[in-house]
Structures are given as structure tokens and as C-alpha cells.
Length: 245
Image (cartoon, rainbow, N blue to C red; front, side):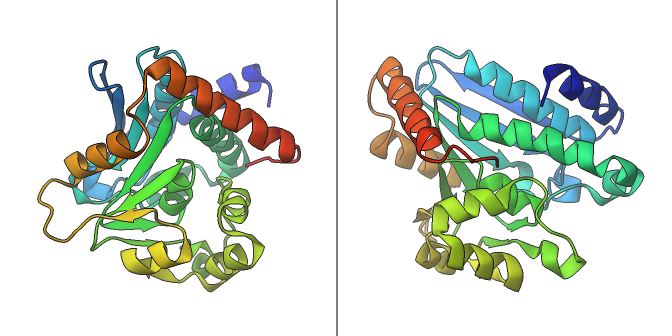
């Protein structure tokens, strides 16, 4: 989509206030923490938060010290999709909102950083879609995740159908989307949706996620990691030229 069109959509979305998306960059470790901050509404996303997220992704593309990114929610839940108060007011703008989120989440997925969604509490609907825009998903032992849009008579609007199919294959993607089942952390791990379940005894899940990311994928120089991630993204896009998340 043309940048001017996205800019116009951005201006409209920014009118729907509430919550924020906050970015913390640590040049020493090379890890960024991106926090969805609307805990009173289980971190559901307003128009302003969508704009914040897009701006944060743009900032991350220019971070030369970066190795990895952890996307999380504030207050014990990841995200439950779009804020219903905002969504009801912006029903007439649904197509444009989806286009804006498509662009943001595509750029998030293709960042030259290794990204992890820290899935805690409830991660439903658009929140589950958002988690698939990261390379990996680390889940709290008590977390639950589900693509529940079907229960509301809706399809996925933020690109998860494409990303899930690429991640899990056609059969599993159809099953998760059409059944609208809500998975426990262990079930998500078994299905291949989650990559690691944090032990129940862990008392600092963010620190455990940082350790998992640094130990497994982010121990090298940032220039090397960013170059490798770009190579993987290019290879992926070449082999799937019709990819449009």
C-alpha cells in the first residue's frame, strides 16, 4: 500500500486515544522490549496504540545495536485484540484499519532482529494474530491463546491466516482458525504454535524470556545477527512470492 495512503489512515487512527505501546532499547544486551500498555482492557489495542506500534517498528529498523526483540503486554496479559470501545466507533473504518495493521505486522515480522512474543494470561483474537508476527512464541505455563474470531462471525483481519499457514501448515491452520479453540501453553507447544513454555517455578518470566533468547539465538555480534535475519527473510520471500500477511 502506498505510504501516503498509510499516512492518511494513521492520522485517522490516532484520533482514537487510549493506552500506549512503549519501547525500551538496551544497547548493552542488544535486546528491545516492546510493551502493549492498556492493562485495564487486557492490553486490547486502540487506534493510538496501532500508530504507536507502527512508529516503534520504524524505530527498530534503524537500531544498529539490536539483536532481539521481546513483545509483551503490561500487567500479566499479552493482548485480547482490538479495544471494543474503539472498534465500535471505527466500524466504518475496518478495511483501512486492517490494511494499516497488515503493513505494521509485516514489517515487524521482517525486522532484522530475532523477535519473541512473551505470551502471558489471555492472548485472544487479534492478540493471537499479533503473536504470529514474531519469529517465536514463549508462553507462561498458565497462558492461553486462541484465534476466537469465528465465534464472533469474523475472519482474521491482521494477517494471521497467512502466517499460521506458513508456520503450521494448511491443515493445522484451518483447524485452529475454524474451531476457535483456546489452547493451553502445553497444547500450543504440542501444536507447534509455541516454542517454549516457561517453568511454573519461574518468578520472573521476562527475565527467563531474555535468557532464552540470548542463549539460543542472540549470542553473536549484532551485525552478524541482523545480516543472518535479513538473509532468512529474503529467502523466505523469494520462495513464497505470493506472501501477503
